[in-house]
Image (cartoon, rainbow, N blue to C red):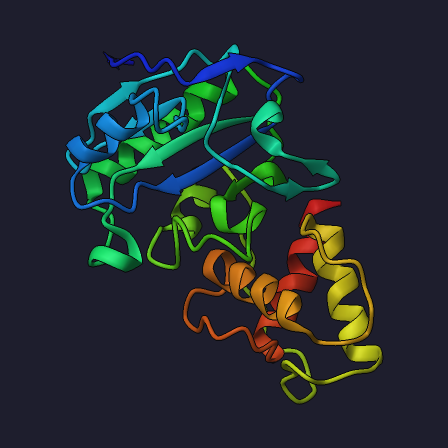
Length: 239
C-alpha cells in the first residue's frame, strides 16, 4: 500500500497492544490545515493516518506507538483508548465547516487501509468505531454521512438492519424499565452508560452517537423503535 510519510512528533509509548480502530473526520477547512495541526508539537494531537479526499494516505505515527487522537474516551471497559487504538483521520470539514459526503476514492482508501491494519493486529468488528462512539458527549465524527454500512459489507465493523421494535419512542426525562434496558444494551455494546433507569443528558448523547453510526437516517437522540431494534440486532452479532 502506497503511503506518504508525514511524521508527527506527537506520540509516546504504547500502554497496550492495539485492539480498537477509531475513525475520525478532521473537522478543518482543508486537509493541509489538518495535517499541519497533527504535526504541530504545540498542538499535542495526532493520528496514525490521514486519508485525503482524493484517496491519498499519509502516515504520521507508527502503529507501534501511541498517537494522541481520542482524548478522554471509553469503549468496552477501556478508558483513554489512545493506548489501545489506532486512529485514522478522514479529511472532511465536519459539521462546523460544511459537512459533506465522503468521496469514493477516499472511502475506498479507508476500506483498504482498515483491511491492511487488521492484517497486523487483532481488532474485532465490534471494536471498529467512531470518535463519537468513544467520546459521545464531546464528538460527532466521523458522523452520519460516513458509509459505515459499506465498511461493514467490506468485512470491517458491525452493521444490522431490523424492523422497528414495538413500543413508543423514549427520550430525555423519561424513567423506568424500558430506559434501564436501553442503557444496559448500549453499555453491553461498548458505551460508557451505567444503567440508572433515567433518560438523562448522557443517555441522549450516547443514543445520538449510536444513531450517527448505526441509524444515520435519524440522529435525534430519541430511542424510537428502529433505533432499539438495531441495537438488539447488533448485540446478537457482537456476542
